[in-house]
Image (cartoon, rainbow, N blue to C red; front, side, top):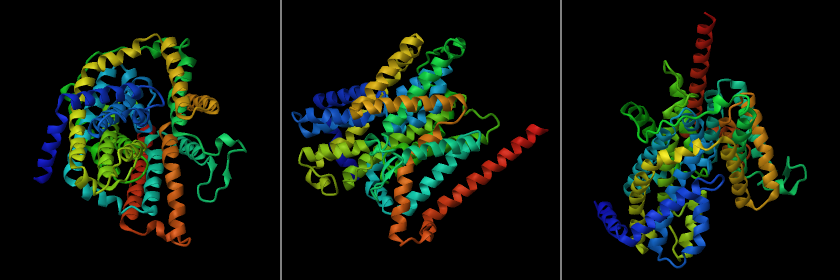
Length: 501
């Protein structure tokens, strides 16, 4: 009951005209920056950080919270409409969300994303208010061997389940891992696969890869077909900014499953929302294969609902971990930590005693911000969807320009512009030959985590490989992976047998 009283005090601070203005401004700014390819909520918070010195801490952090959640919706908007996610957390939303948009269901896709973001964010915020200490204890149970097992589970499950061809899935995964290991080895300091190019010593930025593979690759793919098959690229806008009862019923279990993935990963330092969003997507893909009429690959609403809920649930609990432990588990949380320090505050257990008004006001602003975003974005879904009606030459030329601006804004490097062009050509070739994109993105996102976790585990055990099966969490993950592979293989053998008959 004490938490409810503190939360009520927080609402009394937030629900004032000036603070509500900062909530709305933050939501609008976050959404506006999120729709620019290569940028996103972390970039928006970073850009706003220097100009908030004149604000009081309460107003600044309320605006940051609005930017945080607004940026996530902006990332998803462009992921759905243009196959161009603003950040890694929206990558999984492109696979089915963009197909929904191509099939004339862009407003429904955006509504699915908005409602999923609201459900995932609200559930996570409630858990943060009441159970932040217990959720934080979960992160203490994960060591290097658990992170390695988690990465292996994601690698093989994605390569075998997401792709129609296991070989093509593995090829895509190995391409992603090859890109991930470029640069200087973080432990030995040795140069790896950089061919003596200084610009590659730091590896390849995830933003560069994301924009190149998903955005420029799509642009090149469209260019190659726009004159040969213009009808295939035509988009009809259904114009319905809400979900039917059947669509809501279809999406609801996926929203809840996605939230279940996102909540715990908000307090496990794996680098952001990419891991839970991909795991939520893979789970829905696996469940879809067991249905009589599989929908994945055609614009399955559950393939969008689950990652969206997972991403926002992850962001909610990540902010809880930052406030309760001072533990930044994502890039945006790390920037928020710098913002706290800018005001002379140190997140952690003592923050609840030293600045209770700020903490509970910020937690209350999560609820208010999510409601504001839902009110702002649901009516505007058809307006966003009208971007698809822009003539294709102008639309994709504009996407290309924003891709270049987004990449250059993150690195200020001409070399990265050339790199994104080359990666875009790779994305085009993968589409041309039917090689799936999801395993590649999984390899890039989780490759460094898998490598550092494996080497840390071996260093701590003096080279004893048995440490990788030491502990209940790792055993459960490996058994789950084995079960998934066996079931997937059995289903494919049965499908081939039926096809032969």
